[in-house]
Image (cartoon, rainbow over all chains, first blue to last red):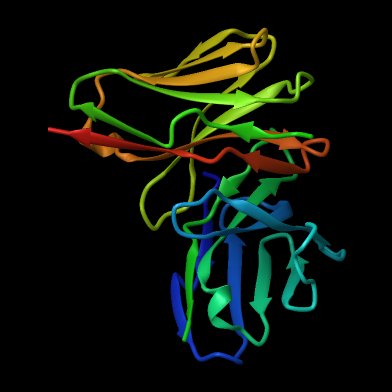
Length: 117
Length: 112
């Protein structure tokens, strides 16, 4: 149980375009989803926390107008990188936390590799 | 401020040996820690966790030790196998369990 999927797994886009990444909890309801960014050989850095039906909470230094997050249902959150630039190239990982059971356990998706040309 | 860091960025071991990955934390009020394994190109995978009311917790081939006095925890992997090659992160909930703070990570390389 507790499977989280991401789509797409890999995306290449031109500079200036927008890219949407989906994060789904497949077998549980996720009241909270988290979006992380990971640059090569670095740790995961939390970008934002989204709760179903409410606005996302962004970490300091993360532009909310550039990284649009929507958590419209208990099983789906989306991250849209708007007007992507080469410096946005990174590994984006989501995680989800269920509404029951252990509230301190996050289940991670497989990640999305974004390359901006 | 809160931080979770690692002593060693890389660790090379021979297959069959035991591996020890270390992590230091700064918040003495921290009461829960998690170890994650991340293989190349994949998301983090939960390995084991420990609460501050425990000093040791064992799983399958893995043991986590917590020393609250020096604010240090370690992940021990017994009989390391090639499949254990990955980056290992310690993590700590923050903000009332609203988010996880990850350490820098240690790359474990297992040689035949």
